[in-house]
Length: 121
Image (cartoon, rainbow, N blue to C red; front, side, top):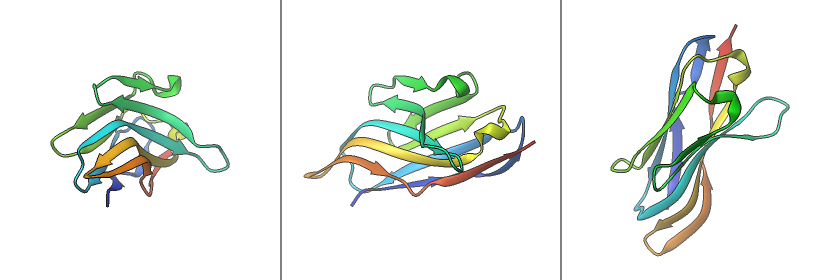
């Protein structure tokens, strides 16, 4: 069974940096795209960044130039480097994988458990 496990969240002061990781466990043949979402208290979940199997990336405007998503295919791990953090970046960050093929099992999407990021002013 494939699982996504996030790590790297924590408390940081405004202007600081964090590097989130999303590790996919299991016998994975392919993943179409991996996304990072975030959900702040009382708000809807928001798509923050995407990286496709071909390496293309996309970001929500509010993090453009501050966040970088990258992927280590050999480790089945995706990273979200977050720099120049702002209090408004405070949220639970979730990893999401689309169209995952593991052995003969196909998953339309998978979600991690989330990791808390708190940015103090």
